[in-house]
Image (tube, rainbow, N blue to C red; front, side):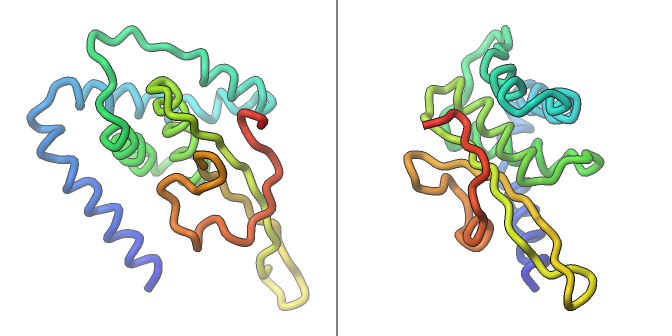
Amino acid sequence: MNAFLTRLRHLWLGLRLLPGLLASTQQRQLLAEMRHLCRELPIILKQPIPQAMAELEMMGEERPFPLPPEAQTRQLADLAALLDRRSPLGLCLRRSLLRYRYLHELGVPVTVLFGAKFAPGAAPDKKKVTGHAWLVVGERPYHEDDANWQGYTVMLRWPHS
């Protein structure tokens, strides 16, 4: 049931953004730019996380228009992450890094948290480690459902605070 609701939320995001994408060349260009970066993330992440994050921070597109307001930029980043279904990276990591890259450019003081926790494994006596990435502003999760991040131990914060 949870997966079904998540799929509905994803579909709703696309439907909500569709009119703006149809009407605005700038939004389509920004979404294309974000999708390109999303496809580059596995290559960028072949280096250690601090270098990869610094690279994301220094990226600057020479686009002929400013980024849209924060909420719209976040939603476009979320859509770009959703559309990259073939990525070897998890959705939470793609979404967090895209959000971070573009919100950082807007001056939003977000921090990326990388966490891990034990989860049930294939056998009752086995556990596996699962990871999650999410953003915070201050110490408050940034547009993240509580169920997604609670229970994770933060392994790395970027930028360090």
